[in-house]
Amino acid sequence: MDSNNDFADMFQGDFRQYEQELAKVKTNNTPIAVDANTTLHSSAKRVYGVIYTIITMFRRSKISREEISKRTGESIATIQRGINELVKTGWIVRATYRDNQGHLRSVYKLNMKKLMDEQEKLLSKKNP
Image (cartoon, rainbow, N blue to C red; front, side, top):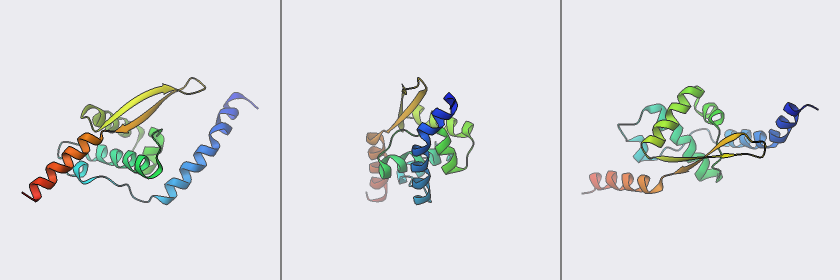
């Protein structure tokens, strides 16, 4: 078996798990504060919805651009722009690390303080 097949075999179980998760989640749960934000592009909102759903429902922060692309139907380039926009505006934090094979990977964390602050602003406008 060559190294490419070894690599693919190693992650086959992860891919099956992600496929099962994808089948369970037909829509992405985008919080109201993100959805109502007028400065974020719609694609960035969809990216946030996927990241939010995976982190909150499946307790997983290792999310590939390919997985986000599959869940949203957007191109990898659009996903990357959405991630960059969310990082730049402070909605998510991205950290990178090297996996066991030396490949650079990303981990995402939601900025819950920003989310809660924005949700509170929306609620206070509706309920003065």
